[in-house]
Image (cartoon, rainbow, N blue to C red; front, side):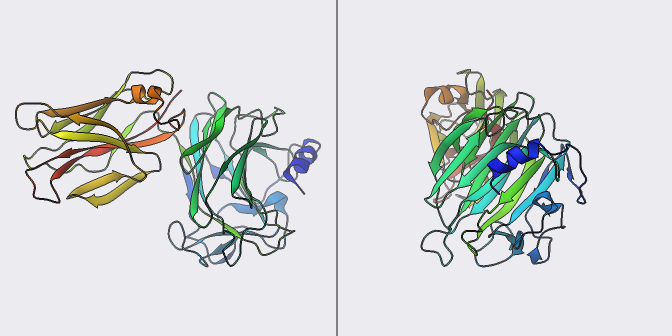
Length: 376
């Protein structure tokens, strides 16, 4: 049965019904990397169940082959008519991001994708009863992913086969809006969470369930895979992370911020660095795919690639540890130089500077790093 048909059917069913599987409790973080389960069908483990307590021929299955996992060694295999659900309770206000990683085998694979793969979030899910969809991504066999959002249809972009792809859905229940990101790139604009994917309205401010749907009865044994799922509250303020490299002059350069990141203000969010070696050339850079902790030039690179350089700066100063840097990141957003810097985008940033007091190749300095989510 298609999800469109299910929408009609759910509307005429009773609102209350039972479920034999415990739901995850909000509004704290939840995650699952499938490492704690035995290999085999996942139904009944860790809160996972089949759609409407059905018993399809091929439920989602925990496997450790044929590809490397995104994290650990195990992941979830989806194929045939598999339709695997996890419910949540308590997620009725605040802002959250739902992340998942999906791997889709390409045409040259031993088992190429032969039917669409679906990732779905529902605002209402009752077993045998009413259901309402708020987010739906369809990864098609032609290498395009389509997002249905608040009645928008065919909001599409290309994806890459034969690699783990990050799905991120930013959900602001307080302001009733949501947005998709695929590998850190926005897909379409924001939409009303309550308006549902078909634009018919009637939804509620709630994150009720995730649905990993194969719908592959017409192409049996054509798998795709999910790993590293997580539902996490979005931090209301930026956070400092990682470890700075102590400079040749004994300084510990420190990143800091003032103001709030905004997609519309044009100013008011300054990311600074202090305790830098004086009169040194430096660069501010950022990424959008995540944190890192990689050895680099005798210190730690804290930003996952791809990396974007914003500005070339001079630290100034006249004595030990007196150098500083500063970048108005809201002004950078407003410049339009990076169109993907939109409301709800994750950003991870750091400063690098020259430090000739160290011998090559370690003749550079690094601050700690900052992560934040861009606000409206």
